[in-house]
Length: 411
Image (tube, rainbow, N blue to C red; front, side, top):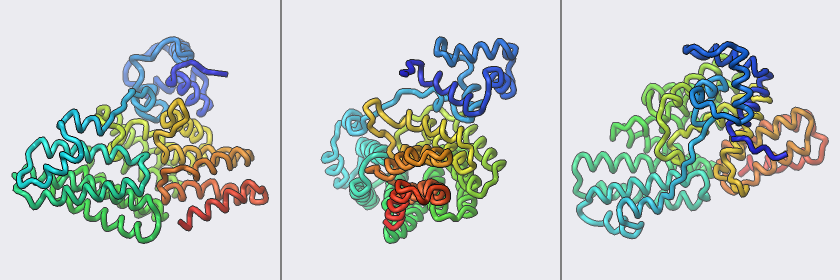
């Protein structure tokens, strides 16, 4: 049946059910997490039921509800946000791409040109989620060449630093796309690109770029199975950029590593540290930028950890939230790489419950996406492959998926 309740009301019910709580249990959890006085347990439970029904919105308790459910306020109660980067460049600077490139060739660079370059870099970073990787790699490298060439022009010290910053962000982007694309040569190139970004960040004195340089190292290590390397890289990045948004993702990478090491306590410590940091940050100006940790991404991080820990009900609930946030009403994937991992998670849960057809259907849809991060997808899909190999190896559908997975790993 169609559920016309607000998405947050549906999520309240799903989160409670995933934990096996009654409304009274949920009320007691709220009181345990609150330092402010709240109504008595029964009254609060009645209020929870009204919130779940969607009749009223929990205006004064949104952060507390999100905390109880282990996520952030803006993930639970999302803010509608959509930007058109190309239109913004034109509106903010009065220039299109041809105009910007022409100005970059001039001997003097004015502030309007630098602003247009910054918006262009932001646009490219925002297209990471869905632009085909070969196209984004070509465009990213082209703009990196243009921006690097600006250093040969007459620049003030402030302009020189700004050029370093934009070059650093582009270098991070190019490195990510190189690693996504798979293949030993591109992955080796990605490590060199990562080190170049780290160098640019240090030269510019820019903690965010430095932090992302360490985050990429943690990500590379995670997909290789070097779990202690993940933790070491994340710790170094957190030390370099403790208050930047990248620290949130570094805490998430630590949580993923601890989940794969089977240490539930350390997973919870890392998840809570990252969640608290993200909760304390304002809503990002452009949540679509790959190097901005948008609030909805926290559910994605936690989903991975709970899948690895075998917490199937929580993992399934979060996977459905990731898909709800990442799929348009017409079925188009807005966040295809996140959605692929969410579908693998649903496949793992289905396989553990013996629903092989459903599991393989989720898995095949995940592997068939047009925009993929091959190392990450291969790593996550291997979880589904392991369950199918161990429990359903004789099923034809399972064998088909395992064959497809072997093809992906060899790419």
